Image (tube, rainbow, N blue to C red; front, side, top):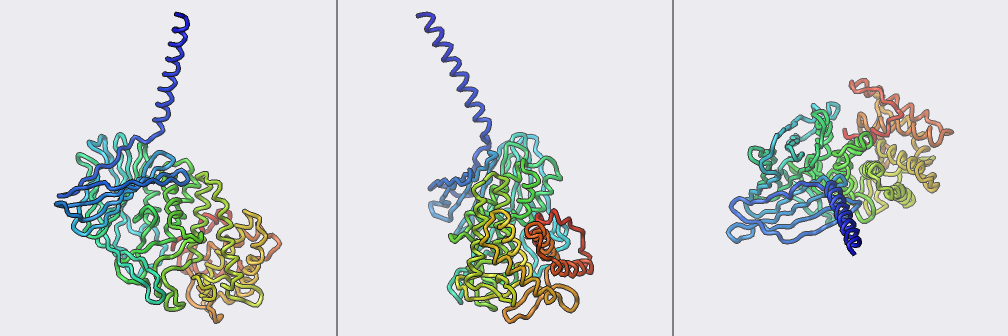
Length: 513
């Protein structure tokens, strides 16, 4: 009996030790970051509800709060905690207020050995090749990175705004536009790490938090900062807002709209491709992936949700339409990041956009030539409404269909691909204007107009040649080479020409000019 108890004791000790080792190993993979402390100046915060959503291993917990002063409701706070595969977290705070609100968000008390870097450059400094904007962007470009002994943080700005969205008179669709009221970027680091979110209307802010270093050095941070000017200045859990063009409804010099071309996160997805083990690029791409999937329309596409006044005037388009180039950019970026994040089932989405394009071609959303056709640039529900065809859209859609055929072997794409190849070969000389530059678009009456982008279409043309020579080596590309030569002359004249290695051209697709 004594021998039995001795054996039993040994078994218990072994099991206990194994449990300690297991729990210690398991806990070591979890983030030790504490939940932020929330305090309202001269008021109270009451938690109302909590909701949880997990998709592709990315967990969102949404906390809903009432904000009160002297027992009077003055607003609501929504705080989303997004947890990534790295264990790191991203937070999105949004206030909707009916009175003056000042919310203090404390992330860490008594930070030790603090380092603090804030970058603030103009777009012209970072991207000198971009064309001049009609309106000056009023939102700060600041981004702050902070390290303590236990945590690292990346901070966006604190943005106060009002929602000026209006119903589009032409079709009753809602045009979603926000008007910036103020942007601040003051991070308190004296006795604690905290930020303050102030507004009397609505407000957004975001930050990322890790128990490890998000960036290894200043160059590492600066690389992210320069991409962030486009891709994560003003972001929420499912949107990215960018300074609006002058041709939007309702109009305001300080208007911001959801920019799908920037939300596609092209540069971030390429950075993940080049640095697949870098925790920051894993985090931001997991965020961008989920953000875009939350933003996705039930038909599988991404719809523009604000009114373009020039599209409305030219074609009577309202706020809910499909921009073919934006969707090309998004599908490419989502497929790229899904590949490097290990979301293998997402590869089926190659067919989603390709099938949509073939369907629209079959329904007549095309500009016919004598030997082929071009898919039009923009789509509403009415397939009979035809818009123009811009050269960059025509090339990008043909390129997407060829790449999709290459990936999936779907032969049903071939007639639409061949129609675009024929149309481009037939019209190549007509795309070149009297100055030797490329026109921007061909209209429904067959006329050509506008001056083409500097770089976007150049990369599209190089990619077209690269794809056709790889996938259809028997096909001619002389007409595309003719267009490339005209484009290169334009770039040389404008001091923008730089040799681009065609074998790496896919990385440049969807560049923002």
